[in-house]
Image 1: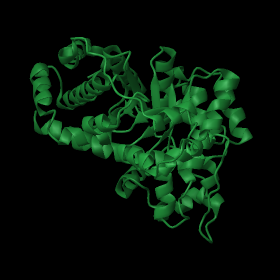
Image 2: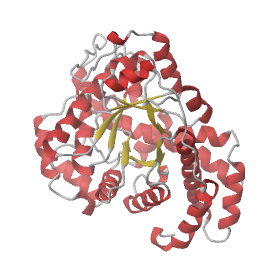
Image 3: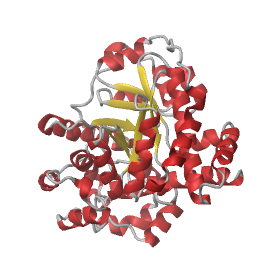
Image 4: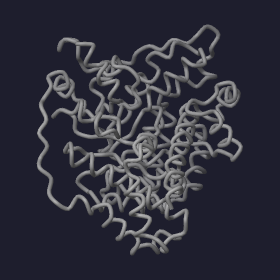
Length: 418
């Protein structure tokens, strides 16, 4: 079913989502906490990285402004059964109007939007809601679903779009329309330089915890400060474009794994913090004087003896070379909203930067899916060394396939109730 042929269905879905939220909500009242206020004083906006209402309530204070969810986090809530009645109701309302696959897409959309509205109303928060992973390579339908999220709650929703060629094009179209995009699954400064210049989203991310895990899990080094260095370097790259070209984009430090990382990233535009990490940070009981902006720092990263940093592609996580800047700024003169995903990928190949946004084959996707959340180094070692793919690009496709697996689990629950 084509996206533009579904106006009546889209309107019905919108009414289903908004049905329980018609009455104005009382403004939530939460205390201020000095520790989190100190972080805000140093320039970092604070978000919680969870979809669990109880977890948010246990930590929420006036210093937090947003909640970010994703396919994995929402799936955890759906698998608890709390939305089974909503799934059944939506299926009844839309019966006979959609093919099975489109029905699943619409119900997944309802779940994301409904859960996002619950979080927003309860905590007075902005909420990042995520596109279905099946849309990752479809710019047209990504734009259509993102517009529908925004129409439901323009004052509350950021729309998560993943880093693919289609995602860049979709995000640019949405940004041109004033729809705030949280561009997700970034892992390096150079990726985010490219994304900021071409897509101009409201936010870009570095999933720093996964980078640390990759290096540590395969004994390529301790893993300490790999993601932190990438996030801080990306903050610099994004700030440069903001200052020089007026780009609206802000940097998010995401995928934190331990409380000490919060202190290491003070001053990054946005810190999105899982509840476990937030509690660990509170338990550190740092004095106010120990909390200071780190954005002028680039912590050192050690590799294990015998590891070739260049072959691994480690420095590509934080270096934005002059050639890339020239190429990206040339591309920024083009309205990429008019390009096809294939056209954009082809331009990057022509400019010599295929490793940042490679074209993945079906066997590649099967392999990275089999690897799980963290790609197997031995499988990809030779291609990393030949710079056919970048470490950042490998982590991005791995992250997308990991989210797709959780999306499938949620879709399977939906399908079981149709």
